Image 1 (cartoon, helix red, strand yellow):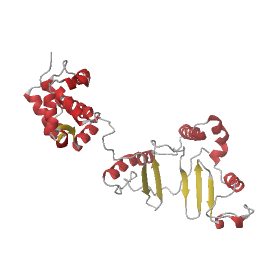
Image 2: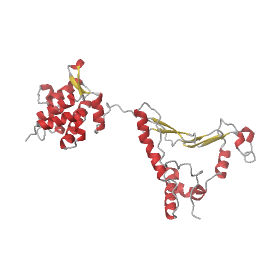
Image 3: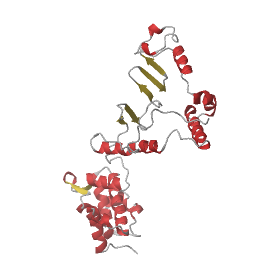
Image 4: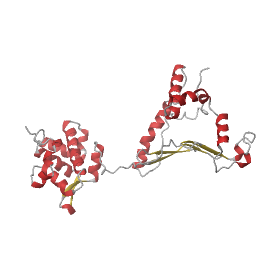
Length: 310
């Protein structure tokens, strides 16, 4: 038995496209969203305007040789002949048109095509299509300025070809350090102990120090955690051993009742960058303030030290 859309349901469909029915959730709203999204997705998947119109004609009950040749009669995903008939889809299409989710293309014999509002509607309710305009590109750059005037530069790109890099880099007034994929350091000559570096006078703030100097510096300033775990971490692996060290520290702190290396405030700050970046992009890349999740207590802790059991 085919399903014929009642006048009441027709009103709900039209009201949905205007946003009025959003405040009255019911089964008709849900079905209407899915139906309109199906229409928009199908139209976006068809590049030729004439073929788009043939699909509309088919859904509204019209038949022609061209429709048969395109195989539109086999589109079972629309549920025609089972749960919905031509009257139902005619109501859906009319509702989308009245709600300005579809428009006629005057240059293409009045063929219906999704509007910008229609594409946004489809994106909001689950349609993913190459024709929908995404504000976030393949490569996203985020700049963060801290309360103390430091600048963080974060890049996110998992789409375009590029050599693997974690982009760990520190840049300061008196020195530079880069860890992955190329490990190199350079300093102002006055910031390196002359007794430690034989050719101290040859240091250059615009040139990486030699391998010999780098190894001496790494040995002198190696962190106690690395001294204890470096060999084991390299053996276990996981991003060069860093995964093992982070897991080891988490277990160590929990077993000894110590503060974790990263607390709930770090979690909130890290996660907030995603939503704040979205807000910035949607508003022309305007600066967006990061909330103070500590409610003013962020500067009570002077410096940072790893907790150890005595």
